[in-house]
Length: 207
Image (cartoon, rainbow, N blue to C red; front, side, top):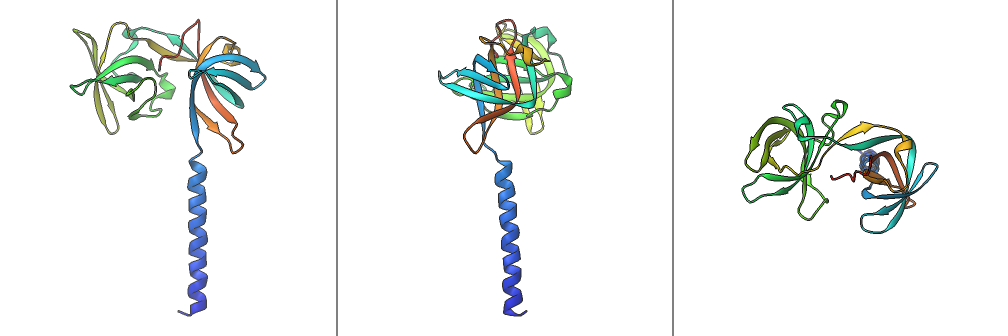
């Protein structure tokens, strides 16, 4: 192989590598989780006082999905339900639920798995399918399964249980509590969201 051809092929390979790297970086757009209170609604822009006390503005996309977070009961968690458990690890390896949200059927599989969470120090999130639920001495004992494993969860009687109800922008009012799971941080530092979850009737999203 001539030196010229070798250099040419090396250049093509390097260019292809740059394209792949650029594509990967583009797919890793930073996201921000926002909890707080709506202070203002100006068209597609929400003014929010965050849980940490800072003021942020989030622009909603034109096709933003708005979901009301509403109270429900432990009895709505059944075998086969797809749920998210905000929990704290117990010494015996179980998770003690501090909040549970029940996904609508059309959101089954959303963010499935077990991961660290920021509701409280050392908290976790498990999105999984209920395999079994039985009443225990300290509350409801639930076994949930996800693609990489399973967790045993204890849900104390006073645990907040909520679900998501599809809604619209009329739900977004000053004073309402919200959580945005993944606001996208744009190159200019602004924040954009294509989904907003807002508490209905005074509910603070507990997850």
